[in-house]
Image 1 (cartoon, rainbow, N blue to C red):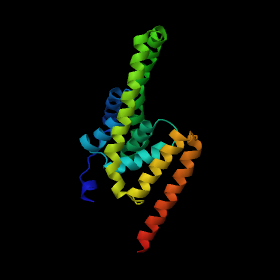
Image 2 (spheres, helix red, strand yellow):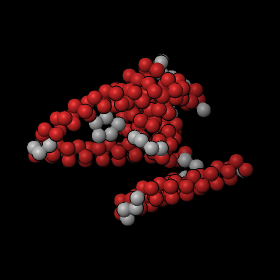
Image 3 (cartoon, rainbow, N blue to C red):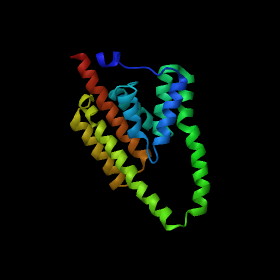
Length: 193
């Protein structure tokens, strides 16, 4: 519990806006790895467990995961003003950049160097996602389901989506409800003991 007491707070909604704006500008192809490092390690606004919980909720909500995390972090500290400031920081400047890059891409998309560069960035994005997953894997030790069940659900989810090509609309509720029920049962058992 001492770790939670030592956490910092953003100074203002402006601090949230600037932090999430800086995160968004660093995250070409994916900002999740950078977000975890900044929010947990540098700013110390969240513990790793709090970040993992926020990401879990963000993944089942509609919209981009990191924007959902920004909304939750902003709301945690400054209510709706913080949520709006964090979301605006995540979206405003990147929106302008994306619109400008879209106009450029329309002009140069047939050039082989442009299409090759974009394929290369896909590999970089996949690497960022895998790296972040490995860094956050330590949080599984504290998960109420335990490491074996968590890894089993990970493998089953990967197999369902990547190998069997089941739609996320089937996999997410199916495995999500199963995981929630199992975690609830374990927590209920621990509470009774």
